[in-house]
Image (tube, rainbow, N blue to C red; front, top):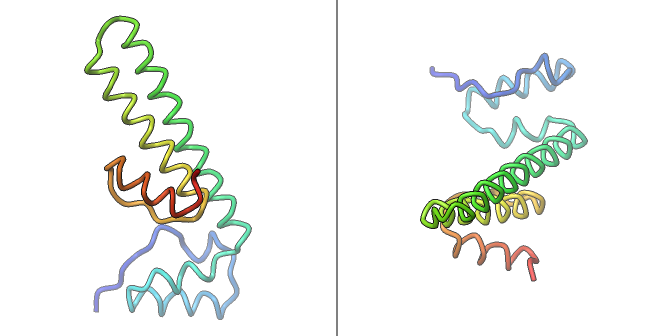
Length: 119
């Protein structure tokens, strides 16, 4: 039987014996959801904040690159980086709401963001 390996290990989570057994069972049945339930909620929130900060950092970087390119009259490249900045900022918002992010279309991200509370 093939056992799927997840990113986290039981040792890094400092889990008790029962939790380690549940992780082993979750690995066998390929269910990441069972495994994620065992992680400390504070650790989940910290990871979520880190992801949101990373998305915003990337968005700000892309926006500054786009502005620099626009100053040099490289408009197609500037538009590309502006689109990337908008996409990453929307993804940061969606992650902050706990949404699972898939896709790259701005229209889809805006629609999903509106459902999550973006005015």
